[in-house]
Length: 102
Image 1 (cartoon, helix red, strand yellow):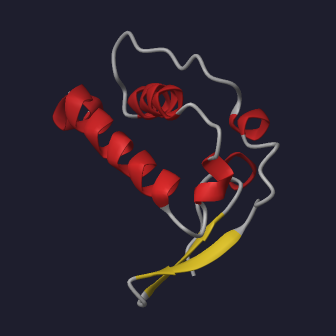
Image 2 (cartoon, one colour):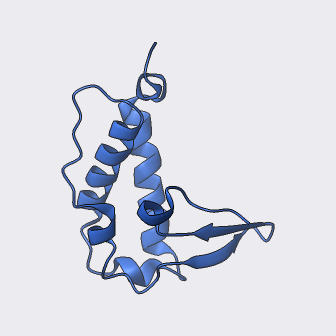
Protein backbone atom coordinates (compact mmCIF):
# COMPACT_ATOMS: atom_id res chain seq x y z
CA UNK A 1 0.00 0.00 0.00
CA UNK A 2 1.34 3.42 -0.95
CA UNK A 3 1.90 6.05 1.74
CA UNK A 4 -0.29 9.15 1.68
CA UNK A 5 2.94 11.08 1.12
CA UNK A 6 3.38 9.36 -2.25
CA UNK A 7 -0.10 10.42 -3.30
CA UNK A 8 0.36 14.03 -2.15
CA UNK A 9 3.94 14.44 -3.33
CA UNK A 10 6.80 16.22 -1.63
CA UNK A 11 6.69 19.33 -3.82
CA UNK A 12 2.94 19.79 -3.37
CA UNK A 13 3.27 19.36 0.38
CA UNK A 14 6.05 21.96 0.49
CA UNK A 15 3.94 24.39 -1.58
CA UNK A 16 1.00 24.10 0.84
CA UNK A 17 3.25 24.60 3.86
CA UNK A 18 5.02 27.59 2.24
CA UNK A 19 1.64 29.16 1.46
CA UNK A 20 0.53 28.59 5.05
CA UNK A 21 3.62 30.32 6.45
CA UNK A 22 3.29 33.20 3.97
CA UNK A 23 -0.22 33.70 5.33
CA UNK A 24 0.59 33.45 9.04
CA UNK A 25 3.64 35.70 8.79
CA UNK A 26 1.46 38.35 7.11
CA UNK A 27 -1.60 37.85 9.30
CA UNK A 28 -2.55 40.89 11.39
CA UNK A 29 -3.88 38.75 14.26
CA UNK A 30 -1.05 36.23 14.69
CA UNK A 31 1.81 37.50 12.55
CA UNK A 32 3.50 39.05 15.58
CA UNK A 33 4.14 35.53 16.90
CA UNK A 34 6.46 34.97 13.93
CA UNK A 35 8.39 38.26 14.10
CA UNK A 36 12.10 37.56 13.87
CA UNK A 37 11.60 33.89 13.01
CA UNK A 38 13.36 32.19 10.11
CA UNK A 39 10.44 31.42 7.78
CA UNK A 40 12.43 29.03 5.56
CA UNK A 41 13.58 27.01 8.58
CA UNK A 42 9.99 26.77 9.83
CA UNK A 43 8.85 25.62 6.39
CA UNK A 44 11.61 23.01 6.28
CA UNK A 45 10.84 21.63 9.76
CA UNK A 46 7.08 21.64 9.15
CA UNK A 47 7.67 19.78 5.88
CA UNK A 48 9.78 17.16 7.67
CA UNK A 49 7.13 16.68 10.35
CA UNK A 50 4.25 16.44 7.88
CA UNK A 51 6.21 14.18 5.54
CA UNK A 52 7.03 11.75 8.35
CA UNK A 53 3.41 11.76 9.52
CA UNK A 54 2.26 11.05 5.95
CA UNK A 55 4.66 8.10 5.63
CA UNK A 56 7.47 9.58 3.53
CA UNK A 57 10.24 7.04 3.09
CA UNK A 58 13.69 8.11 4.27
CA UNK A 59 12.54 11.39 5.87
CA UNK A 60 13.35 12.15 9.50
CA UNK A 61 12.02 15.04 11.59
CA UNK A 62 15.03 16.95 12.90
CA UNK A 63 13.22 19.72 14.76
CA UNK A 64 12.58 20.15 18.44
CA UNK A 65 9.69 18.39 20.17
CA UNK A 66 6.43 20.23 19.48
CA UNK A 67 5.97 21.33 23.10
CA UNK A 68 9.52 22.75 23.30
CA UNK A 69 9.20 24.48 19.92
CA UNK A 70 6.04 26.29 21.04
CA UNK A 71 6.98 26.91 24.68
CA UNK A 72 7.77 30.61 24.15
CA UNK A 73 4.43 31.26 22.43
CA UNK A 74 2.08 33.34 24.56
CA UNK A 75 -0.91 31.59 22.98
CA UNK A 76 -1.71 27.99 23.85
CA UNK A 77 -5.37 28.07 22.85
CA UNK A 78 -6.72 30.46 20.25
CA UNK A 79 -10.22 30.63 18.87
CA UNK A 80 -10.89 32.54 15.69
CA UNK A 81 -13.34 32.61 12.83
CA UNK A 82 -12.44 31.92 9.23
CA UNK A 83 -14.62 33.56 6.59
CA UNK A 84 -17.17 34.40 9.29
CA UNK A 85 -18.56 30.88 9.29
CA UNK A 86 -16.05 28.33 10.59
CA UNK A 87 -14.99 28.60 14.23
CA UNK A 88 -11.77 26.68 14.81
CA UNK A 89 -9.88 26.09 18.03
CA UNK A 90 -6.14 25.58 17.88
CA UNK A 91 -4.87 23.62 20.87
CA UNK A 92 -1.64 22.20 22.14
CA UNK A 93 -1.56 19.30 19.67
CA UNK A 94 0.95 17.23 21.60
CA UNK A 95 -1.12 17.36 24.78
CA UNK A 96 -4.47 16.56 23.16
CA UNK A 97 -3.38 14.51 20.19
CA UNK A 98 -5.18 16.60 17.55
CA UNK A 99 -6.66 20.06 17.04
CA UNK A 100 -10.14 20.33 18.48
CA UNK A 101 -13.16 21.68 16.65
CA UNK A 102 -16.26 23.25 18.05
